Length: 180
Length: 240
Image 1 (cartoon, chains in turn yellow, red):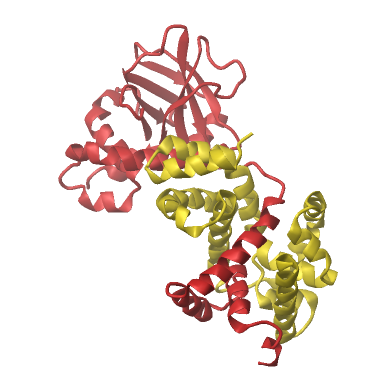
Image 2 (image 1 turned 180 degrees about the vertical axis):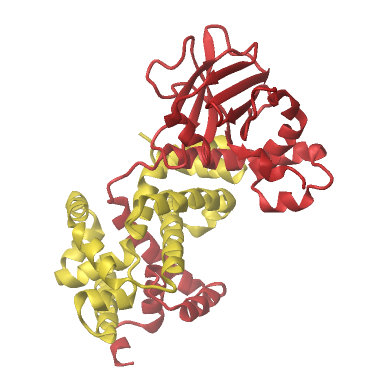
């Protein structure tokens, strides 16, 4: 089992230009980062292209990891998610197919529900449980699917400003809960 | 806006920035402020760390092995390029800008070794050059669609005692490497491949692994991948 210390060491060696360390980091973390990309892009081939970019970016930016103050997995996930969302937005800049986005999101309740259940002890799950279920879903979808305010407003059938208010209040509640 | 009363504006912005909910202009403006305002960075860091735990709970999924192969090939190219600068041809400069580093390295080697790939009965259209990181192993390979012929020329390097070199093709969208079999390390070999394997070559990657004598017992590489190269089309590089 690869733990946090291993992954941190891999990143440290990658920062020094160690290619074998990048391969080791890939072996230890690609399953998770691929699922992050796939969740955003909803297409295996596009998610695989994104994943390759993710590790090239990690290769280029590993020396900056220490100053982010993050745990290694938080940093890797943040890099992967942002890059996947960049690709998603670039793809959709001229054409937004809202129906298909909503459909894909709604077709996949299983793994998420299961994974949320598996992490009951985590603070954030407990705090999500305090939110009204549809608002918790909206925050999760913004993070995991990279959904925009417009997509969320369409999906929950509320005006855009209402969705913004929902999200901001939900985040406020989350923050209060997490800071308790 | 009336909906901002519940949460300080900067905190809300930080959360929206992390969630990627800001439009492009607002995102850029916030990113600029982040450079100079440590308190904003603290908000961003808080949300990045908390929200990432949601992703940690996603079930893992397995990407195609070709992703790893391409990644290794790309990084390998980056390291090898400076050492091979001497081989870069005169009139080729425009090409180097347009092709990835590995293609450049492969072409450099191809220019040097191509006469050996051009027998009268064998006219390859796709090539791959396998060179290990330490330079101790070097294998040239070519594929001719006419007759589905595959030729392998071991230039340098021998397997350890009791071990064999085995070649693999990794198709661009294939789920796993497909074996081309064990190759003799002391002489050229020319063999016919199946149409199924031939279909993987264009756009695919060639790899060589270190295996037990007789080849991998499992049908997948079991030993170290010693070198990789994407197949490249020699005609692309021919002048005029």
